[in-house]
Image 1 (cartoon, chains in turn yellow, orange):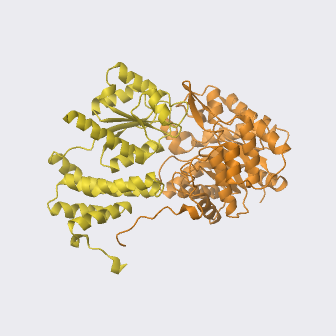
Image 2 (cartoon, rainbow over the protein chains, first blue to last red):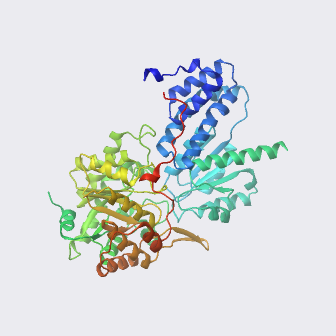
Image 3 (cartoon, rainbow over the protein chains, first blue to last red):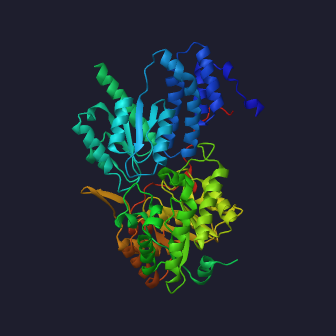
Length: 231
Length: 336
């Protein structure tokens, strides 16, 4: 494919960013790492590289996943490429005090041992630049609370695949309410048998149909939360 | 080489498989979070009862209580060292029940997914997947299972690994995938792509098909998708008893026995030769299905309209096959 070969370092900034969106879409990790390096050399701030090149690219991936154009394998490859870029950016973002995307604590509820959906959400959230702490399967309310207190995340994510375990989400939310902690966190729920109506009934902030929707919803809620804090 | 399932298939137009395992075990008091496979050792009478329900309701085939019996799943309960034992028990309890049935009943050794994502996206390599399935298959074989029954698979690579494991164990096998995402599996496999994949296997299954997924309508659309590929291989339909609904603080599947009876007949008319249920399918559903299959004459292949009229609407407009699958390809800036 010699004639198609693109030399990333010869592209203008705008072209390079668009090319990186394509490369994320195709899950090309090495190319993303190279692109991140070039933008940083050209004096871009780590935060601009993150938001304009990587997060913007993953937004396209997320939209096509939502619309049934891409499927999980492609999305995971894209998230993996994104992670390659994030690995370079993470220490730099911390050094420069850039705003954080947000942090999520996620886990499958007590009684439920199904974790593939939860794992996908975790990978996609990381792909979108969020920090994710995965509590694994079968989490009691105590375990969720301990993680919320030690990690101080923006978001609590709960997953359940079984009709017998979904009601436990309400137990966790009710406990948060009792302790006056409910308003401190964005609570997102997901899992095959759930729906919007159920998430409202148990007092969650939102139901996320799939991992792409989880990312979009998380971004929207975190932005709203930051705006409220700024106001 | 013949086996219990191939013999039944050669003498019957259709066979009835069983219904739910999890739903029935929860009703017997299995607490959620517990590995159902532990009951093979700790509550064998309940597992016998589960199998007996299927036999008494007229099933020709029932699946063993070993869905999560691979090392990757059992590890979540610290029981990765008990794979052989728990699978052997699952099958030997089944053997006991089947041998007393007074008619040929096939003990199908259930093999569920590893729950891991396969490389390169995830961490599970092909070699480890084959090894895990093989370990489970040997346990089921030792307990006397007639066939391996691989189910609820999402990734083609995992299905292929299971095929290899069956060959290593020298066991005949069947394998179904779960089409739960707009007519495709979670990993994007369409019904047409599954047929193509199955026919390319060095060790193809005795029968292939779909289980679980969304509702019974979607499942039958998938069966029509298989039929459209013209494969001669027997097709399996194992759909859920409707869709779980949250009502008054509890959750139940909305499919009635009458609906599942319609589903069973439509599944046969759509081209399935092995027909059963999945989540939410209780003995009363199976009895209604058996009766309908025995008493209602075979009809023409149903249209999508006939399926949705009888069983409810589809969860998505398309199933990803055929001409209307042309989701717009992303406009590329240029090749690489």
